Image (cartoon, rainbow, N blue to C red; front, side):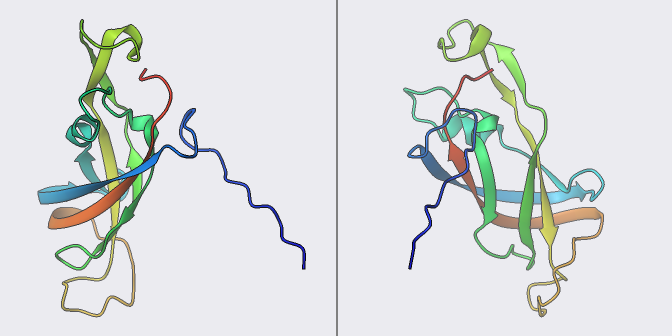
Length: 153
């Protein structure tokens, strides 16, 4: 039986295959407005990207985020998924390294997560419809899959 060669699709900007990591992120929403048309639950990944890099390296670039996956159900029994990144903003930083084009560092990194499920944690979660629009108070964990590489522009 012939074995076919498997190829890994490229991802990230110019990241190399061996440069993949996972960052655990705890999300706490307190009466945060969920909008299906607006992308889901708004979150800000700025502090995660700033803290996830060792001091000797620049902050992780939002374009280095390959994907996100749920660690499990949220406190209210929903399944987070479908991460979408918004448009990050940058500020001038005179002491930024040369990796940061124009001496800029990450200021904000908006993102959105979709939530799926059918209700309270005690119910049967056989159906996974998207949460209805409205205020969400919930906590959950996700893993960001990161492939570092490229210039922070």
